[in-house]
Length: 190
Image 1 (tube, rainbow, N blue to C red):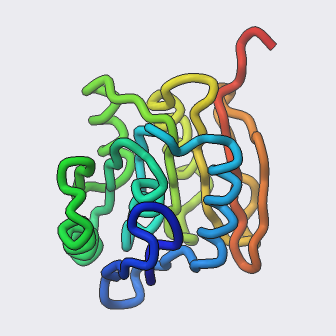
Image 2: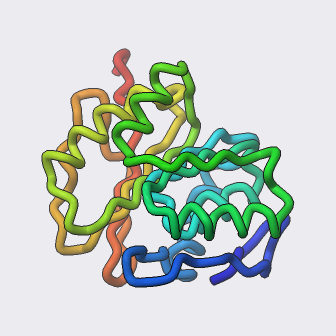
């Protein structure tokens, strides 16, 4: 696995051992980030990478101009892999790794009044729809403004996530076995 484009283009990433993580394939990342580049969603962005795994989404965003990335993963293997990649890229000043389950981490970030321009949520495919809906409602409170995006990655066999009233689908994309929902805050003036 490697960084596809930007400042760290071609640099390898560490991946956690075992089968507990499911890194986003290079071609899916390439398509996703081409879209995000087209939306000018990366330059100077504060990014949250939930269920970070290898950290490939957050590190790709950093390479392409994001200002800061917070990685959240409960596993010690993913945390170690992300830490090694951050050290190799010399990006410690623009990153933070939190070892926690996603929902408690989001709640702590909310209590700390943190806000993000871009959030990646790549939960384990077996995550239940109720648990995902609860997480999306909490994450909506972390979105900086109406231009902020929340990308949810799931299996093509998964139903569209149940969205809280504050979120709507901006775009939906399917890449092979992966479906992504690009969500945004609902404009109350619309």
